[in-house]
Image (cartoon, rainbow, N blue to C red; front, side):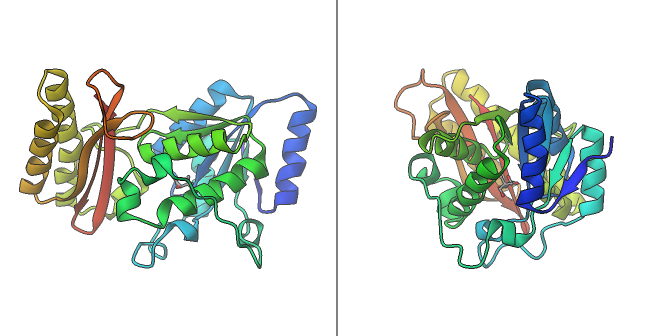
Length: 280
Ligand code: PAF
């Protein structure tokens, strides 16, 4: 079925009001477009929990720094609508910019805790304020029961979960396991920027954190395991921002080996920044 597309908050609310009248539960999948199978998986997971799924498409300028790829960010609304229709989304919300940032807009939702863990926030200082501000708006505008987020952006998942909790937004944030290419590379809208050779090299990010996680489980100390992974990536031509192990919930540095742990990494390959993480 072709999903309905709405561009205004009023039209979005007309649709969700009909669902509420019928006692239907619905999930939201926030995206910036450039839909790939990772997003389609979020829609499928949404359909398992809810009767209806809304996907939002908005390339959010507030989460891009001046030197980042806002203008270059891939945009293909028609292609996205087709893919989302196949995935089973019922409604697509592509807000006109003034529905998100109307004239005079001056509110920022800003978190400490997981948003200041010294991971993405250290390298992209504007990023999380931009994400939490728009995600708070999308949660409130849609009024959804569930929000589907990929584990690939692990810090983002933990930040928006904490934000919903702190602001009493009645939505359940659901983390969905990362969808990977056959060789293990995490699916990402940014993978299209990789040259053929870089695409080959890129899988090293997943294999090196997988080996590090195995080594930690096997008893190697965390520092040695992450140092080894960092060196492997550097030897393969990556510029490593971080490879680190954190508490899987708070993202704080671990205090004990028996905490739930996550190994989290970010590294540049040429002009493309890749991120990945897995549980230890
Ligand atoms: O993960 C993304 O694509 C974006 O950060 C999000 C959650 C859609 C907010 O703009």
